[in-house]
Length: 389
Ligand SMILES: Nc1ncnc2c1ncn2[C@@H]1O[C@H](COP(=O)(O)OP(=O)(O)OP(=O)(O)O)[C@@H](O)[C@H]1O
Ligand SMILES: [Mg+2]
Image (cartoon, rainbow, N blue to C red; front, side):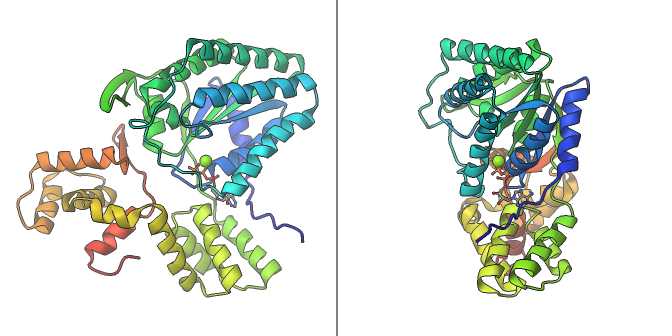
């Protein structure tokens, strides 16, 4: 049976990014997007093929492939690219990329996000690994030059390099090499918007070392332009709707699917879980959504979170989400009313700290990023005293 291609393509967006790094004076961009919004799928299925057509060599590196030792993953992957380049067949490069696509399709985006660098045993990055990476980048530049291509490094889950001080030499090494060879283009992507923004927009950032939070200079500071990764557009719902009609004779209204997509915060991952429900059980959308909501709660550990969060932390999260402010007299009145006692600014500050420590929100240059899909909705319905939806 022929497979259905459920991937909604965005070739114009891909071309726009490739041209942006290829032609504009700043040849590096960092895409910010929450988890499961389709970054990796876009980079591998839309952007890499277009980059190839435009005579780039796309080198895809995912920093989550080996979380304990991202440097080992970099060395291993660059080795494979060098071998492929030396073999002089575009086929072998394509094989490297298609093996990444396979990995994505098998995982369906279910790569574990939870990884605590403060407690796990990280192998420290050695000087010889750093010089090996530098040599490999130099070799890739040389081989690309011979075959009239431009190297385009696609570095996914880049925020992982900021989760431990142990990884800082990797950041410095990449930065130095990317600065040295101006023909290199880079697209970074990450799933913590605040985390990525902090790497590129802040001179200093907070890192965890020996279980303590410390401040360190950021090697990637000012080295890329930050772009918010756009969610799938409204035409995507029509695309999915037409597949449901063509292959399953299911006739759902585009409006109903659109509002489900909106509730799922435009995550194509969760939307596809919904589509799987309706195609297997042929239920109505609302019943399928009930199942998806339950899965989101389990997946994100939302039930546990709702139990663990202190009452004031919950209120502060909701307030920041709705009002984008937290310490005004109006805010303090809101907390005090809900808590039934006077709440001081210092207590709210402690709440914000706890929420950040749990990586539920990040703040950067006055902007607040909410990193946990579905948390606001769950908190809100809990506050309204209703059932959690
Ligand atoms: N354009 C698309 N069309 C259809 N489905 C998509 C699309 N993009 C992503 N998906 C689906 O969503 C899943 C998750 O996407 P992807 O892994 O690209 O998200 P991500 O933003 O990289 O997530 P993470 O932050 O967890 O790495 C994919 O496995 C795929 O099933
Ligand atoms: Mg990804």
